[in-house]
Length: 267
Image (cartoon, rainbow, N blue to C red; front, side):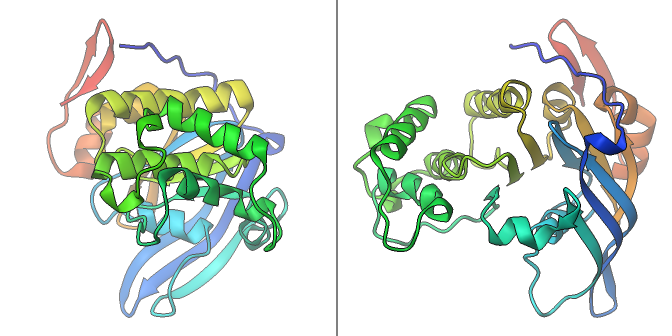
């Protein structure tokens, strides 16, 4: 099992890329998110953690400006000093949701190449270097043997890995994943999280993931944002935030932290 070290999470204003202020999101009388202030550092792998209904996915959708008209929304979100909508419209945020759609009659390679769309005019086709990059990513994620297969024939895990490849094809400095380990077996989960960790620390990407597995959040990420009932309970380095007492309080169940030769495990 690979060992992941956590760099110092000390944050200055120059290290910040995303700032959320006075975020209030509700569905009728139910408050989904209520955050007075939250800022996220650049060049980190950050996990949103918390129990079901804590607001993790809602927060991610807020950053991506993806809420439907049935919600009332208030607040301000800026990225690198400008409205987040600017980056979203320019296709500068790669994104994989919980329920990606695979309805188009595309091959695996064609679907991967959809990630180049924000970089091309409507009349342009992906170039040879794009195809080469897609083939390399399909190889990395063990999908090469499916290159010419229709996407509808893939298993759930294969579709999930392909969605990640499509997002990586955007070549953005910012990536967001909502429960990216869904449908993946343990080997592919470890590969994906280690891959994302390396993107951050070798290519200076800024990545946000929603995770349910506490052991994975502690082992692979540089910083966690602990949410509960739509509020930020704590933010910081995993070893600081993810204590037995704090997690047990938030999750309403006794959570024990065990130190093993391979790292910390939560049970």
